[in-house]
Image (tube, rainbow, N blue to C red; front, top):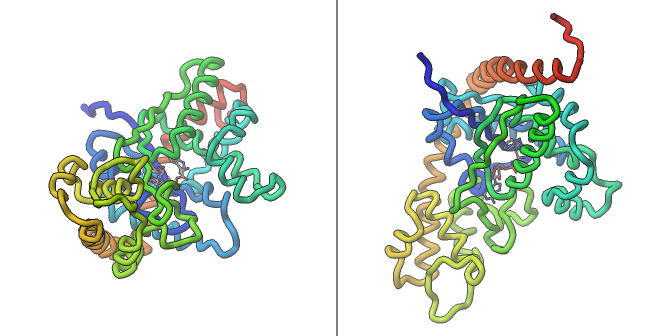
Length: 339
Ligand code: TYM
């Protein structure tokens, strides 16, 4: 007899190199969850089109992302790894849910407001960027997902997903499971190294703000050494996001990659100077990235294996998502081709 396992869904958009923020905010939890949940790990390539330009190395980013999923310990025999565009059900449900979402609720999405501000004008903002959270809702709802491990920046999108699902269910019965976000207290918002009041992001134009999983080790050490701290005298290491955003951010990074909680770290770090603290962070991070990159390269060299993984993943994802889509279509009165 197979026991019931809750469904877990998460994704990363291959819109650039993966950062230590992506890893700490979500990927580091994935392998641990494989035994207790039915896990779907998606490469959200359609989402990446919202920031696409002809210089985006999309194919490379997609293959890199699959390799990092594997390097983080996601096991294709336990979890389903697939590429969003291989499962057409996502786009189909996206259109249907567009018709159950309100313009005003999308206008309230913080990520859209921020990205539009960067573009500065509506005329330059593509419609995909506006629609993005509804595609995300489709990703999640197709699999009857119970839990979505994400960083804090995605919380609002999960709330929107719940609202759309609730609205649909109120009209048509229990069609969609309402998903819960899984957001860790520590590490759910890793900040920029030089500007620790803003989120570390793949798309930052200043690469010294960001640690990428593919950074070479010497540049990681340099970036940590240059990172912003504060001028408190005498310098003391403690956790206080408001007063010491730089130090607190480094503490969160160190805590995540060493698996030690911050209180334990603070005891170990008592009495040391900022310079020594940065050396410790740089050293731990370098060792961690060295191991991760070695495993990544093993997978990345074998493209035919990567393609096999996502081929098999797509077949399984299509089967599961088609059930939900058929149910939705039938409730709406769309006529099936087969029955
Ligand atoms: P993306 O690709 O921007 O980020 C992937 C994951 O990394 C988390 N994250 C962070 N966590 C901590 N600190 C940071 N500085 C940081 N930066 C990013 C994000 O919260 C996210 O969990 N829309 C999503 C991808 C997506 C998705 C989904 C996620 C598509 N469909 C369905 C969950 C469920 C995105 O762009 O994430």
